[in-house]
Image 1 (cartoon, one colour):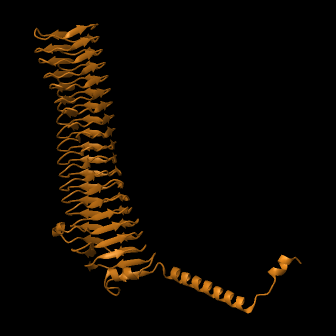
Image 2 (cartoon, rainbow, N blue to C red; image 1 turned 60 degrees about the horizontal axis):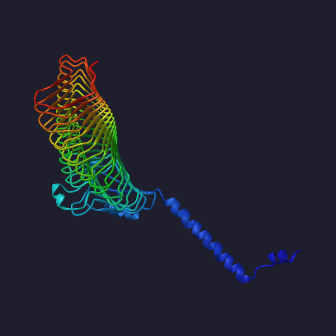
Image 3 (cartoon, rainbow, N blue to C red; image 1 turned 45 degrees about the vertical axis):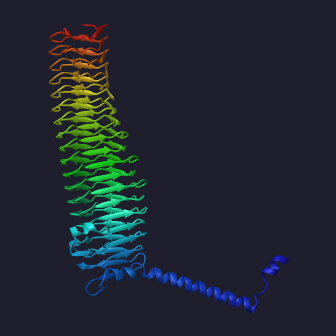
Length: 499
């Protein structure tokens, strides 16, 4: 037998046996304790008649995996949960009520707890003076389902909390129904939010990025959703209507949510308002019936991407861009609005407007004035009550190119009041007045390489002292003159074909 093997078979002395025995006993005790913990996990603690007098007492006894079942009644207390338990109302949620005026009704602190089938009431309208909300979430990933929150403030989510809030009714409050801030995230889906004095949902601060989807947010005295101070997130598949302020507001430098596939309708202000340097993407939404613009974009540095939306039948313009804003407006369908399809106004305002269909509005297709610029290209503009494109005022100088402008109830393009700009490579036909009309002293656009045809009026008409350049256009088939120039107008004409 080898020396190593001999060592392995040396008998243990009495002290070694005693130590080994104690270690075995301790291991067995630890295992027994863990088994006992598993055995009691999943217990149910009842609150109400025949059980605990308060929710807080039952929560204090519960361990991870346990359930606290709350029977019908009104419980006036603040409940704090730090363990992974389930807090559930028994029966109709309207009859299981937690209310408190001086502090939160429920605090969820760094937990994965689930709370369901209860009503939380934050003490009426006087609670507007009190900062706490009905429910405060501090960190963690809790789940809130099937709750009703009434009056006061609703839910505050802070300090990197990432809850799931699903199937709740949050109504008649005095602050935001749900306030997400300080880097929080989570999922807010399938809730009904209405009747609040302020916004339905507010998202704020850099790093804050919740997913807000399939909610119904309506009839608030403030905004539907307010995103500000550098926040982001995704807002999708919501129905937002009847709010007193814009359905969605995006505000502030660095703020850049994705807003898609929502229905935003019948509001008492704009459908969506983007301003103060914000950006983001607005796509595939249906926006209609709002009292002001379908989408408003304003302020220097504001530059969202607006694409593939349907914007129709509003009481203002489809899209209103002003105060130095920019951004890209592309592939939208805009129709039936009471004012212009798109309005671009103010010095420094310069969006890119391309590949849109703008039709059958009660005003112009696109109106550019007060010193604005921008690029209008590859759009189809037809059937509008006023000019397809209107350009006016000194300093206004857009680039208008490769558009199809047809069948309008007035002119195709009208430039006046000392405006300029470039009009090139457009196809213009079938409009009730001149294909292109240039009028007023100081008005001097460059009109280049366009096809202007088959109108019931003049092809191009210069009047009232207008100037500019008309070069290398094909102009034919118009019922009156292909090119008409009044005696006091002095455009430069070169290389135009009448065939």
